[in-house]
Image 1: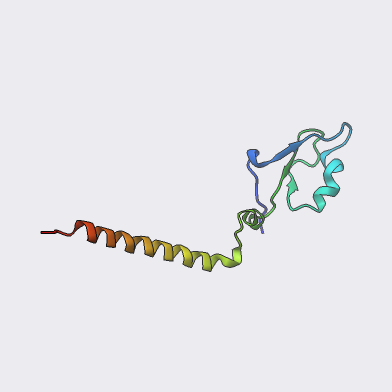
Image 2 (image 1 turned 180 degrees about the horizontal axis):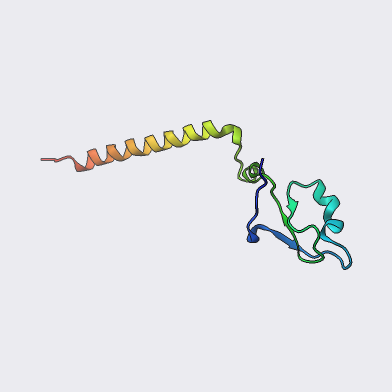
Amino acid sequence: MPRMVCKPEELFTFESPSNSTCNEYAGECIKNAVGYMTNPDANSACEYCPYAMGDEYLVTLSWNFTHRWRNFGIMIGFLAFNIAFAMFIIKVYKVNKR
């Protein structure tokens, strides 16, 4: 599965102590985290992407890939209701009344 690539504005940037790389400074913590370091060998301006896979980002929105068909059904129901309601309103207010 391909890894998610963060945009520059989505990265968390932090400084490592002098004489240590980003991986030496945060490597142990990052190993247990969900995301990944974009520049583990840098000596300053360490960049961390908080998501490695797309599903990890969707969890922050309370979405789950296993509910995709349920969510699709809700979307189709919402669309059908709006079309039917719009047709009803047009019929009620646009009928030639004498």
